[in-house]
Length: 298
Image 1 (cartoon, one colour):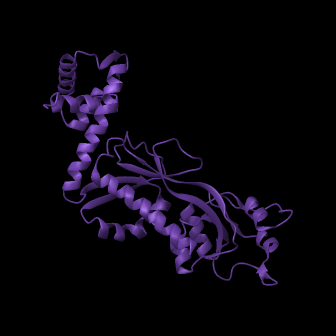
Image 2: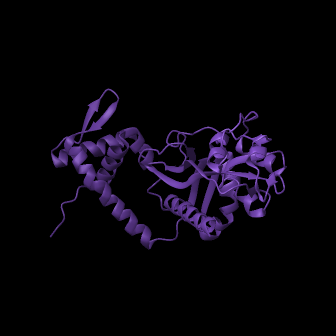
Image 3: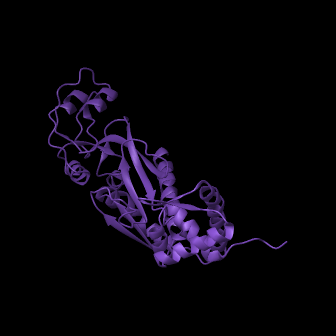
């Protein structure tokens, strides 16, 4: 039986405009003019004899019929894309990822050699900044950021932030074969700007009547870790962010006390998710997280 199919270019224009909510963004994604998108959509509406979009002061919006049609068309395009990619060469191209300095230095960069061995044809470019970038507005493919609370849908959890206390070997005061918590509380203590949890940590460690702590001005995570390695004090830090120092023995854990405190989440640009290389990077990050959790639990 012959299929009743509209012109493919018209369907692509409608799907992109409906998904992105903008003729202009659809034109950018498909690398055509705004007028071409408008012409294709108008032709599709004439062919189907329905209104798929309605004009608004802020642009265009889907009609009820347009939303219903888009809900069927987008998955169909996704299936065609996935079937095509399954037959094509391995994922390739440039993927841009924005993240903060500490997670780049301490967690991502030590793993990049493994990523390149797994995906030699993907060029993963890191953009390091202390600012939380709008990946859609700045055209990044993905962003990896620390969030204290659980985000809305659309984010991928890379790893939970598990805060523990660390110090250089020989720094921790010992009394009777155990950590002398009251002596440790006298300092020096190092405070990271994000994980300001020393009173809570001492309470969970078993110190009754936690004294007023003489805490210095909080440092960035990188400086806090370096200060602890240099023997300048004990530090509370996400175990993932001081992973190189833990594995090398430059920092040792003070006590078996852990405070869950947010996590690192991956956001993916809506225009980038359809690219096989972007999905490959996301899958690799999730695999690395699972591997790290397995090694930590052993």
